[in-house]
Length: 278
Ligand code: HXC
Ligand code: NAP
Image 1 (cartoon, protein in one colour):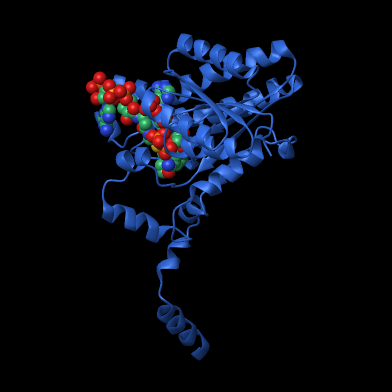
Image 2 (cartoon, rainbow, N blue to C red):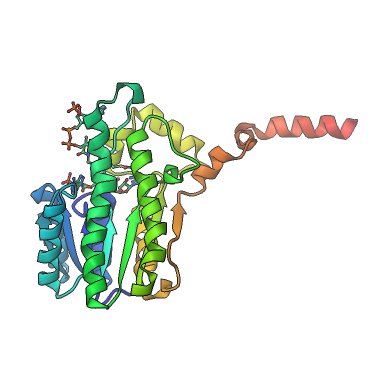
């Protein structure tokens, strides 16, 4: 499905980024992964090479526009031309907002919002000049929606909402250049990076799973399949869209009566028979 494609993927050394890199390579794409740590990037590239695929990496802190520009140039040189960008790199942690330092806020917003902008602009300007179009997929979150948000992860909520605004804005501004921008809003997908920072305890993890309408977290292949579809030629007319992939988790919190899911059958039966007697 992705034969001949060349993909620049931020945060491609770990978690969902790693899963996407391996999956895209399996489907024929050449993959250029970036991040701050060499080891995980090297390991992903080695694995892709062992499986007969094509991959390369560069150390790059996406907060730094000059580093992004250098990595974009290296990627273009490596694969002739990058045609797809996945803004997946992120920073996040849970904290009470009143205790955040300015630097803590900046650390997350710098990675998520500034980083996504740096990468998008670096490739957008190339694609406009080359007149060959391009494809951007931004990995956001379900709480990125401006009328949602989430307490205790306010820098991330602000930054992801900004990325979503960039997605919809540029989908229109750059459509005439055949550049598509879409987003995926994942619910909970177990990764070391997210779990170590956002899951306070085993008990909380069980509570989150139990509250989930499907009683399970996402599987990486479910997300990589969706990402593949959105960047593929099969989705050529999808532009400026954000697809939620969370098994109905955020809707579970939205419906006023959804907590009734906790009522045991016996309680329903009792209410029903009481109604029948009236
Ligand atoms: C409060 C914190 C903090 C915490 C760091 N800081 N952790 N403040 N609570 N838990 C503060 C520091 O004290 C510092 O402020 C500032 O943030 C920068 O911290 P550094 O460690 O110096 O920054 P840096 O090395 O750049 O690391 C950035 C990071 C880190 C975001 C803090 O966690 C990181 O590298 N994360 C990358 C991977 C990641 O976060 N993955 C999870 C993505 S999951 P001061 O003032 O002291 O200098 C995700 C999914 C969401 O997004 C949805 C899940 C369901
Ligand atoms: P992860 O493994 O921690 O992924 C984050 C990646 O970003 C890491 O590879 C990290 O590599 C890279 N990164 C961080 N700061 C960077 C910087 N300044 N420059 C370049 N790269 C940087 O977490 P994940 O769970 O897979 O998250 C992947 C994406 O999915 C994120 O956008 C996240 O918000 C989103 N998401 C995840 C979940 C979930 O449940 N897992 C839910 C919703 C959304 P280095 O540290 O080496 O730089």
